[in-house]
Image (cartoon, rainbow over all chains, first blue to last red; front, top):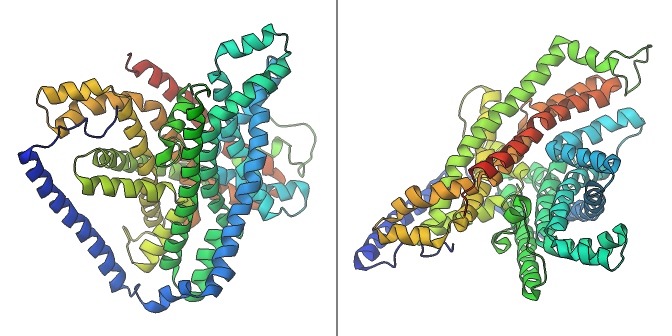
Length: 296
Length: 241
């Protein structure tokens, strides 16, 4: 159901007048809210030019924000590649006919999906050095944590994708004499990957956001450099946080519109199998409006 | 569970976790950590659900201002890392702008965390409900309008009850994510489970893996069945069409 103008009638003169009144009332309420925020800032002197001025200087960007963004994107890119590999391996593992492959793969995927990423990162960063008796690199602690979690989520997405390929595809492949591994690599995975492209890209948005957890174990990413360190020098934590949030929003909106473009493109070809199952359904609904509804 | 022999330095020794968690003060750290998680999940979930339903109603309303506010909310908070939002709640709202709920530091951090979690999660709840509304056939709303129902009546009597059944599974995954996300409130100093685990690990370097397995296992044992439970419930309550 399209929500536009189905829930209410086309407004007549009376409804138009009522909507106008409500628009004015709520418009004033929103303006009031903005004014309240403004005055709250004003009261604490947060509009002072010295707090905002650093963002007009190039050194702020080259010393803090851009290196931070680079750290964020680097960790996200490496983790994305690794979690794609992890996801494919464990999705295939869970679909295996051998219980001794299927069960461990399923257990690993379910476990890492249920454990908070922060807990995982703390374990990798603070715990693993006790075992290996070597210091852990912060970058790899962040990337490993992101990979284990997002890889498990992707494994589930791939599995749903393989299930969404019509049964006739694999039956036809078996009928022409393909082996099980050939059916998987030649027939099922390429089609599943295409059906799952939007989900994969939405997961990238989650990954970019989750790199901010690296701040907690002091990895040099956007929140660490662009907010924490910047604010330590200029005392403008509020302003720095707003600018950093804007950067995250821009990056993620770009990724999201990329996901929307991809899904429109795959849909136009008309060959992508229809995504089935709750996991894929919620993630593919209106990706153009901001990624998967289910990925938090 | 106690293994034979005496190998206190071995990380896989199962005798050690019993020692770690038989210490009452360590057990307290563990219990307090998960109590915070429970409270954050319940309070944050309640806040996010209420806020999310209101936002969803705003996004489908006939008033453009409300639609705009709803859309802006979703696009801002869904694309910002939760860590940054919690960070902002503490350093922005509390330290800089002087918002505080109660005098007790821990409790105040708890409420700041609840605000952050609700504000962030509400964006996802809103989108889940909105896609739930999309699953209701247009004829339902048209019939409601034909018998003369207003927008509020159509939404609350006809559409939302049917949409609600369709969004049980997505709301379940949002709740699970919220529970896991509540560990992030540890950033602002609350001794929730992940900080508790960090402290125990640093104090008991010989029992790292058992400590991790106990903490991670607690989450897994609670959350994996919760996920399957929501799936079962969603199937059971689905509107058959």
